[in-house]
Image (cartoon, rainbow, N blue to C red; front, side, top):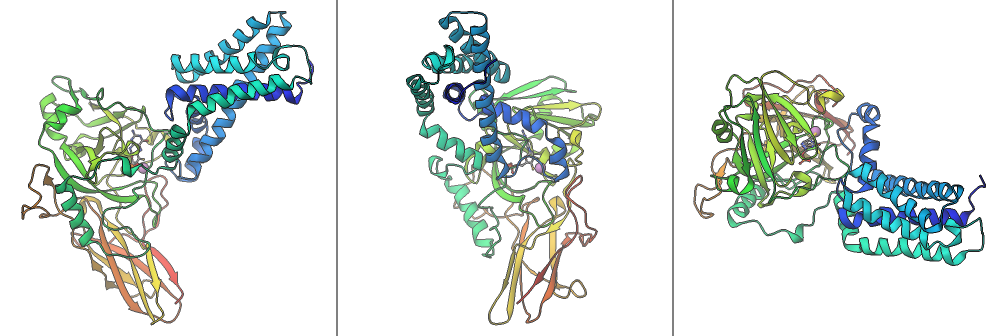
Amino acid sequence: MEPPDPRRLAVFAASGVAVVAGTFLLTGFTPRWVVVAIAQTVLLALPDAVLASGIQGLGSTAQPLLVVGSAGLAVALFGGLALLATRFGRGAGRERAETVFLVGAVQAFAAFLLTITPAAAVVGGLFGGAAVALGGRAATGPVDRADRRGLLRSTGVAAVALGAAGAGPLVRAVRAATGSEDEAATPEPDPLARRLLETAAARSFSLSGAEPLVSESFYVVDKNAADPDVDADEWTLSVTGAVREEATFDLAELRERAAEHRFETLRCVGDPRNGRKTDTALWTGVPVAPLLEEAGVDPDGCCVMLRAADDYYEEFPLSALEDGFLAWGMNGRPLPKGHGAPVRALVPGHWGEINVKWLTEIEVLEEEATGYWEERGWHGTGPVSTVAKLHHVEPRDDGTVSVGGHAYAGTRGVSAVQVSTDGGDTWTDAELTERLPGPTPADAAPDDSAVGAGEAADAWRGWRHEYEATDTHEVVVRAVEADGTVQPSAETDPYPSGASGWVAETVRP
Ligand SMILES: Nc1nc2c(c(=O)[nH]1)N[C@H]1C(S)=C(S)[C@@H](COP(=O)(O)O)O[C@H]1N2
Ligand SMILES: [Mo]
C-alpha cells in the first residue's frame, strides 16, 4: 500500500466534513447528530475521570471542547472510511462509480450505526460520496499528485454542505453548547408571574458577585452532550409499575389542571461548598400527587424511578414525590430546553439529580433500584445538606467590609445566617432577606392583595453583613435551620454525598 499523498488525504477529509455537515442538515444539534453521538460515546468512556474530579455532567468549558473534539473525530472517522473504501474498491478492480457508491454506502452505514437516524445517514452518505466522486483522480484514480481540480471540487462539496448546514443552526448550536438561551425569542412573562418576580426582586439584596433571589444565570447539569429533542405536542408522561391502572398524560391534559407558580431552589450534589450550582427560579406547573392518585399508586410502594427522554433514570422514596411538582414554565416563560422542556420534575428539598428533566415516566417500584448517578458512585437522591454561600466580599476604602450570599437548607428552612470575622471564635447574626412568597394559583388576579403572601417551603434566603476591619482576617459563615440546628462544620467534598461544612475566606482589607 502506497502512503496516501496530502492531496488525496485532503479529498477524504473533505468527504468527512461533508458527512458531518450533511447529517447536521437533518438532525441539527441533537443527540441524533453523528458528532453528538460520538461525544456521548466519549463521555461513557470517561466516567472515572469524571468521578475523580467530583463533577456531574460537563462544565460550561468542557462542553464546547468536547463537541469540537468530537467533530474532529467524526471527520477523521468518515474521512478514514472513505479512504478505506476507495482502497478496497481499487484493490478489487472496481469501476469508479462502484467505488464511489461503496464510499457513500459505508459512510451512511456508519452514521446509521451511530445514530439510528436513517434519513440523516443517507444524506450524509450522499454528501460524503459526492465529495469523493468529484475528487477526480485524487480520490479514486491511481496516485496522481497533480489533480488539483479534483481537490477543489471535493472541497466545494464540503463547503456546500457546511453552508447548507447554515449559519443559523450553527449559531444556535454554539448557543446551546454554551448554555445561553435565546431570551428574545421567548414570550414575556404573564402579568401574574411578572408580579411575583418583581416581589422577588424587591426582596433581594443587591450585592456584587451574588445572584438576586431569582437567579439570573441558572446552572445547568446533565449527562448529555446535547439536550434531547422532545416535541411538546407528542410528549406524554406515563405512571407505570405498582399502580392500579397505568395512566398516561399529555401536556394539554396537564395544563387543564389547576396550575400554580412556586419559587424553588435546586442544588446539585456536585456543587462545591462555595460553588455556583445552587439556584432559584419561579416554576409553573402542577403537583404530582393527584396524578399518582388517579393511577391508583400503591401507597405501600417503597420507591419510584423517574425516567426521561435522554435515557436518564433516578430512583428515590415514593414519599418524596408526594410533594413533587411537574413544571412546564420557568420564571414566567416556557421551560427552556436545557432545563428539561417540555416538563421536568421538582422534588422539594432533595438534591438536584432527582429533579428529572425531559420527564417521560414515573415508575412505581416495590423494591429499591439504582439510579444513573448512583451507578457511578454518587449518593444524591436524599435531602440536601445545609449550606451558606459567601459570594460577595467587598472591603471598602472607609474601613468597612461588606459580605453576603445565600443560605439554603431545603425544606428544613433557614432561620439565621451567622458570620464570624475572627475565624470562628465569635459569631454575629447577618441580615436575612424576607422569605420568597408561597405557592400562588396560576389563575390568581395579578393585582390580588394575596399575591406574594405565604412563604416558599423550599427556597434559599439571601444574607448580608457589614463590619469594620483594617487587618487581614478570616470570615466564616454558617446557616441555622428553622428548628435551631446549626449547620455542621465537618467538611466533606461533593463526591459522593454532597459538600458540607462552613465556608471560610481570608479577607485582606
Ligand atoms: N433527564 C435528566 N434530568 C436531569 C439530569 C440529567 O442528566 N438528565 N441531571 C440532573 C442533575 S445532576 C441536576 S443537578 C439537575 C440540574 O437541573 P438544571 O440543569 O435545570 O439546573 O437536573 C437533574 N435532572
Ligand atoms: Mo446534580
